[in-house]
Amino acid sequence: MTARPRTQEEVHRASPEEPVNHAELREQLRAEILAEQAAIAEAAEAAKNDPNRSRTIHFLEDGFTALGRVYYRGEELTVEPGTEEWQKTLDGRGLSWLDMSDVDQKIRYKRVMFARGPWPGETYDEADPELTEEQRATLKEVNARRFADTLTPGLSYKKG
Image 1 (cartoon, one colour):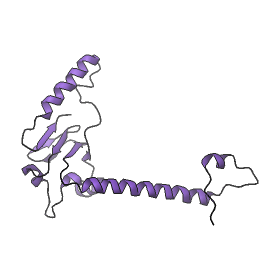
Image 2 (image 1 turned 90 degrees about the horizontal axis):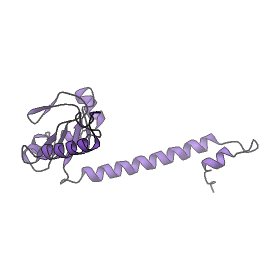
Image 3 (image 1 turned 135 degrees about the vertical axis):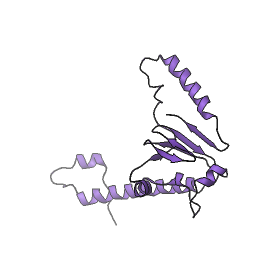
Image 4 (image 1 turned 45 degrees about the horizontal axis):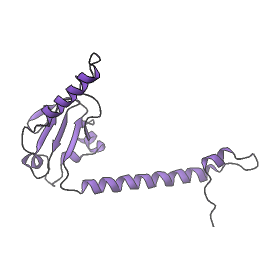
């Protein structure tokens, strides 16, 4: 029978007669990390296996060329599966470069060029310190409408 792992509070209250078992704490932490990594991998695999989900990425570096144009830092690209543009992202094995991991990108491009999801920050115009909150909200709305228009069916991009 193994003893239950101690909580952090119990460890901090340990008396000199009761030494801290660092090996036990390391093993408990290792188990928690492995469980979290497994849950993340399972969720990522489930999302990756959904053939109908659109892929949105944002560019981290200037100069990435794809689908007939050059992308710059902060721009977004969304591609819908089943479209002509989607077919252009597939390699010979039927895998899309949009699903490349950071490691895969480093191997292919020598650096990470894009990340999954929308750009986390504001556009350059939206970040202008001279804008009032009302002007910033209006600009965000205008940019959302302007860049939401797909220039090609199944493909949309948003300027950073």
